[in-house]
Image (cartoon, rainbow, N blue to C red; front, side, top):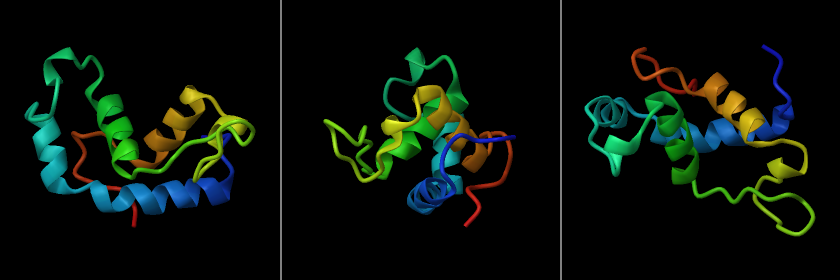
Length: 99
């Protein structure tokens, strides 16, 4: 899989997400024990993005909105989700983010 995210940005994202991707949190999500779980259509996607927001990284565009990572300067949500999918294994798999 070829990702559009720069390797250095992917590494920052990996280091930020890894501490939150625990087996305990995975179990909570698998059991629907998270806010507004009844509205969730894609559990794995919800989990990936919740992990990303737990990091408290600010995503900027490099122009008007400066962030910790200026991903929106060259990526859109689909590209960012692809990077998250690369880092965060599906909930049914017993693997967390590669540390």
